[in-house]
Image (cartoon, rainbow, N blue to C red; front, side):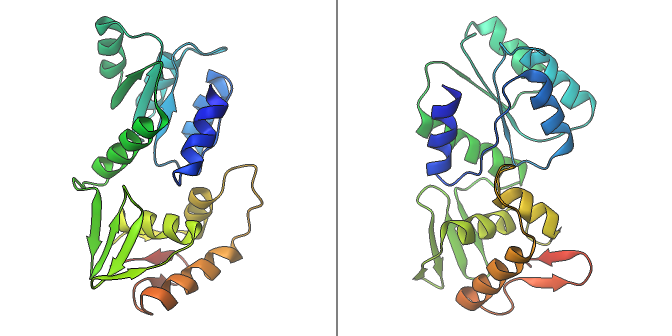
Length: 206
């Protein structure tokens, strides 16, 4: 089931990393930068509710979607009171999980609409369609991921390491110089001043 979910979310544009037990999941959520987490409750080594409580006790603010077979109202209340942002019961449909994740990520960035807009650029997170001043712009999957990440963080400095974590799963080959390549491509397609280099710190879209 986890494999099906990973594959389905990857097809919708997410970079997904998977932990097979609660202890590993807790460590990954504590040490890595993620846009959101999907958390099962019945996990080996550390129960999902304990993972969530420890994340929140450590002031980890990443949005958490519980996905569990435990579907009574009392169990949902326990999960939400422990710090979950949403709760889906099994069986599930991958498109619904993807839509809810996107909504959680938008809300965490203070954005309500599924269409992100900035400086003449619009990005529809439901269709992945990008337009600039009304003209459609074709982006590759990784260019789209990078642009989406920046548009959720307008005005914030984003480091190269953060972009690498967002674009590549742990098992992927990670090369920081590819970030400069994708930045260059976005500038070529959307304008040279769309992303600013902040020397020694990273990049910013403002």
